[in-house]
Image (tube, rainbow, N blue to C red; front, side, top):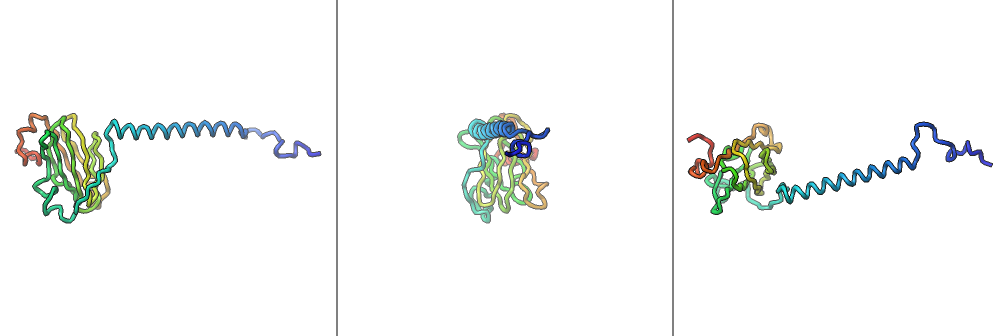
Length: 196
Ligand code: CUA
């Protein structure tokens, strides 16, 4: 006859040891919490993508980075802010070690603005704080991001992708001006923030 006190399965648990069924119950609760958290986070990603227009940089347009300056969309004369027939604005920028060209460009407030960027050398980043704009600028590809500025002011755009020794100094600006101030500007004045 087995002595129940010497059978380890029958022995009462010493103080401080949590019984198996309590552990199982706690684990199930944590699992529920984790699955709920995952579901909430996935829902936020989908919601922000649809309602907040925060999108991954999924635009796939290619361009030869070695001939940017020779002509085409990113030739020097095309850079900066251009007005489309529908009144929206398109800003074309070239990122390169260690600056954006042009360094400052003007846009109108409360107007749809599309930024089209490409890189002449390595991967750079393009971030406009307090807007939905944040994209990588990859040589060989055109990044296409859209936004609308609700307040006038100077928006600093730092390169947010490490691109070399001068990365920390790679900044440019967007100057958002009232609509009535923007309209009379000549094309060259829209692409520079120098006071005329
Ligand atoms: Cu360009 Cu960092």
